[in-house]
Amino acid sequence: MRLAIIEAQKALESDEIPIGAVIVVGDKVVGRGHNMVESLIDVTAHAEIMAITAAASTIGGKYLTDCTIYVTVEPCPMCAGALAWSQIGRVVYGAADPKRGYSRFGKEMLHPRTEVVSGVLSAECEELMNAFFAKLR
Image (cartoon, rainbow, N blue to C red; front, side, top):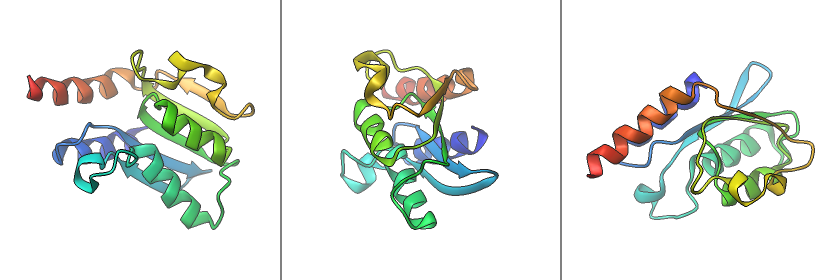
């Protein structure tokens, strides 16, 4: 999760919503990403999507069944759908997102075999989000 927080800090430095993601297989990082929605002018350029694309390229396949994604904020429904299609083995996230997180719309959005762990370093992840939105006000 610490690597995902570093990715989120990169997003914050670029005036993007500070969400970061890292995908690992065992001890090896195979994909990483942070929000790039504003810089790419692409509503789909969420941290998870960027990390999934990088991981699939690294491992040479679209299925991430042996992988774990660490993401600083609960995935949105779009990202949960992409994670489901990738058949990711495990999702670990920090801060919950009660307004836009996938679990608000149904926890079955992920693949049935995907394990979910929530609340990992949640205070640090929430602090990044609060810092970003405080700058806007």
